[in-house]
Amino acid sequence: MADSGNFSEKRAHERFQITIEAEITFGGEGMECTAIDISKGGAKIRCKRDPFKNVVLSIAPFGELSGDIVWKDDEYVGIKFHGDQGRLPEIIETIVANARKR
Image 1 (tube, rainbow, N blue to C red):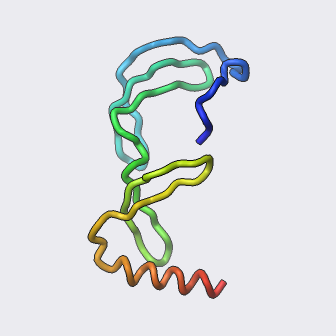
Image 2 (image 1 turned 120 degrees about the vertical axis):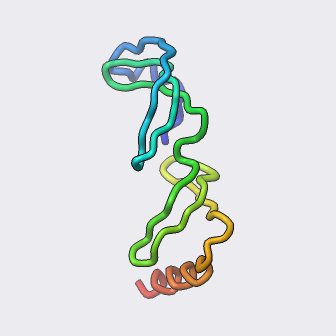
């Protein structure tokens, strides 16, 4: 994610201030939001909650691990796995063992 600093001098299209209720979808899930400004090239929106907070990490062939994104930095995010994941310790141990073989 890029910093939302001063991009005004880099914009290709004029932006228009608006306040319109909208919805974004990702991964088949929708979320209410508010469009704050819009241009021919994009839009700025405000969400009531972080759309990327609750995620599912899929690592084939090991399965899926659900968690929340707890930090973001440039192109990286940190995921905290949800509490009771049943086989989580076994899955992590297998993933680590396989990664070390490469």
